[in-house]
Amino acid sequence: MNGWKTARIGAATAALAWSAVTAANGLPEWERRAYRRINDAPDQLAPLAWPPMQAGSLSAPFALAGWTWWRKRTLDPSVAYAAAGFTTWLVAKGVKRMVKRGRPYDHDRNTNLRLATQSDGSLGYVSGHAAVASTLATTIARDRQPAEAVALHAFALLVGVTRIYAGAHLPLDVVGGAALGVLVGEATNTVRTRLAG
Image (cartoon, rainbow, N blue to C red):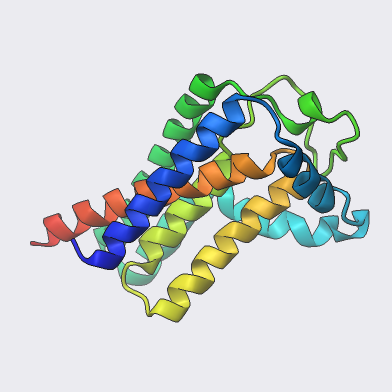
């Protein structure tokens, strides 16, 4: 394992642990302020926020896997995208049950609920959308140049920001989701390397 990969895994592990502990203890004032800045952005941005949000949906890894298979007709990376994305979605559900943090509306009744987001009593930490998008960014970035990898992760971060804007998640939900995504993505890439021999 090279030093850069070790650093990414270490940073993601630390971010996941810190965000989980902090989120489990409520809503810090700094996080509330950060949330309000994003969630109070103009309603006119909603049509722009919806498309990138879909990159973190459960269907995204399967759509990417299908498109990749159609283009390359190879199991790797098609299977890697689908398996990593679905695994991330499942793990995120488990983390939600452990941390038990509510959605933004449970903490802030002034939340702007947008893009079909509802206050339905479901759990917020971690953001599954941020996690899936981060996993896909990490697995795609495996064979890319550094500048492309940075762009992929920036887009994954944008997915998380759109979820805050929609009123579906708080900032630490997104931090935890992004960190979880990096960990699952790196694990997936390790398996891919070993299977490739």
